[in-house]
Length: 466
Image (cartoon, rainbow, N blue to C red; front, top):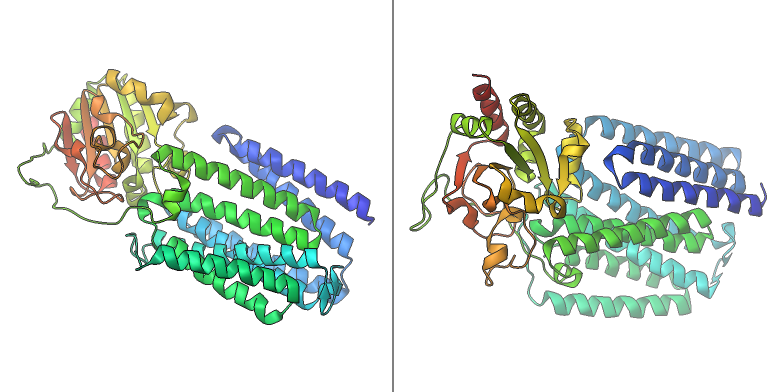
């Protein structure tokens, strides 16, 4: 295959990737978007194989690798529950970062095989591209592992604030730049691995102090990093498909990170420099100081919603943990049969990754036209009879609007407190990932339903049937 024809096929695969991103921007076209993405990747892999013309032994190894990776992917896809999707995404990001490091190392030790020089004399431009790609890849690898551990509950969701962490991070960043320059000038293998080690350490130190409330930003940020790592290695390998794909993933992840930060009214820098959020707990169903809560039952909730004209459901991570999305869909269907208008309101940072709630509702076959984003539905709460909050905490906290001392002050929230009645399912009065008390619990129009989210919704469905 000629280089010119291969470049054309890579361009076609790039167009397919763009169509994939476009398709993934809306639930109704997401399946088609996935098909475009798979077709683009298949074309890129096939083009690379035909262009390289590997030996029979090399081709056997490639086929074996594809079979092992594809087999593992198929098993994971079938076994992983939708509630564990955030940590799965983080784990996959780590593999992208590790692949960038391994490919860069292979290029360093065998440059003649990809035409970037000979052993001991790699082109200077390739060295710069290689070092940048490997640095971003190593940061992505360890950062994603830490994110996975936090999301999977194997590490505390609270921020781990190390002493003088900012000074240490700045010192490591300066050292990393110096090592990259030195490596590009000397092509020292030792300096290459020092770049890798410093980047691995920086990846851990950047993500460890970020708390659970900022995890959606972290996931999209690591997605962006993995793209830039792939693009950097694409330049090293002179592979157009990697450059296009990496640039698309990197830029889309960066844009998504910006959207997430805007959804929390926080700057990207403030998230990276420490973040907020932890997994604190409070007393269950009790007074907190001189404040009291109004506690209700499944029968109370069923009566209020059955006699309502409009109900807006606000899902949060508590719904994901309890895997209550299917029971919630059943409850909504029952209410609609009673003539109640039902809608769903999604906050941009609800859950632990961008689109987490949308994915769970789609799994339960909730109609797409009933699901609305914050800016599209927030004005409707004031004309709503019942706001049904299931496991969402910080994204409904009125302190974000009125308490200038609150760490979430200024963050756009879903105005559930403006509904005539707010039903709030929660296990306890514990705080959310921001680690602060929710004043919504104590409002006169709020009724707390203390229970596991799935069990409470199932009990409400039973009560609606009577």
